[in-house]
Image (cartoon, rainbow, N blue to C red; front, side, top):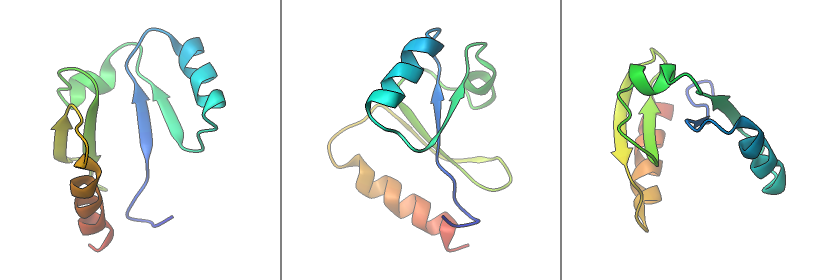
Length: 86
């Protein structure tokens, strides 16, 4: 891990128990924030899911991607590496 990077998943559903069970099933080892009240969705203006937001150390949303397509992870990696290298 790097001081300039952390991975956090945000669950915007109202099914925290279901999400926890899913994370156990897939053996996830990253942090999960349960946003049942929509606080994070409002702060970062998240229109729907899935959405990937890359946030800098100051808490600013630097990159936002709505939806997902094959190969999108290549762009995500470039953006994350840019922040790590700062």
